[in-house]
Length: 253
Image (cartoon, rainbow, N blue to C red; front, side):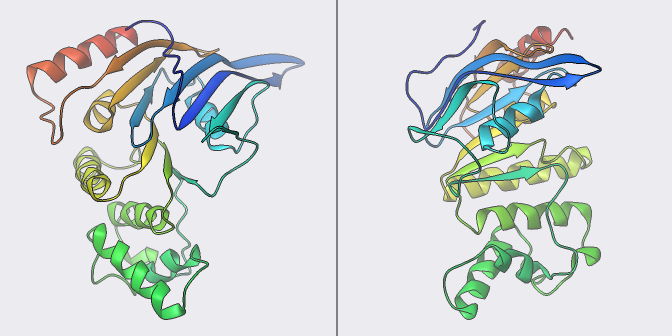
């Protein structure tokens, strides 16, 4: 479907947001007016050309930046800053190198005794497949294992919304696929609403219920694609390959 996907209701409502920055004495328009909704429990993938403003967009949706125009609502409340309901998983990573895996996961927990926090941290460590590494430090782990720690660190605080900004982009293709499968397994057990920014169309097709394709800067929603296939998805299926070709065509490839 071409054009902007403007939702009437949803857990997250993005209403005609625009954003620009001062540059060389002028103004660089980055987000040119975007509206869409994300339903409770839905995974919405957002793809677009490099430099189109994807990361700026998700920072606004997550509450870390304010739009110049428009607004973002979460559960009918205008987003004026980061909310305890959501957490960001980014490509930069947020694991503290001086803390063990268990200590990293316990860091964001504010309730319960130390024993209860440790038990919860160990539960999520096992959930991402790292049982036995609770006392390991980040420098003792591989890149893929570190990303698993970051996912566990995000999930342990039980966020209702995950904002994912190219979370697997630094990984090789095989590890990327393994962690996507791991994330889907976790999302089957624990319901989260997810906004996923990615440059990888296959990654978006693997994870998303719906994909928004952004235009070049100043970015707008150029097209919307439903992904109606149940999990687990066979990415080599003719139906998914046809959908992939359509999305790539929108991206000029």
